[in-house]
Image 1 (cartoon, helix red, strand yellow):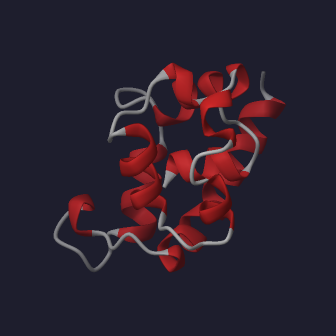
Image 2: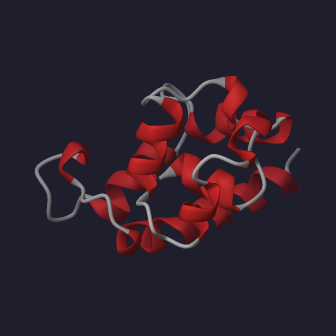
Length: 110
């Protein structure tokens, strides 16, 4: 869901400018399906812009970032683990405002 938020908010690398992007914007493909089909389930620095990579390093980083904590707090209240969260636009819409708030806070503190 993080990648889809980045893509939809202009923090994407050039690779994402054509393939499946219209389907993502139209919500014809889920955030997880987009990630699987476009990135082969691997998020690399080529997937994001310079600003996107800097934000990802601060917020998405597994050891120091807050993304997984936000993800679990928002989406895992009724699931056994983060791996059981449904890949839906409804769940994306629950998490997206939190990511956006974190992005604004990160930008303000740069």
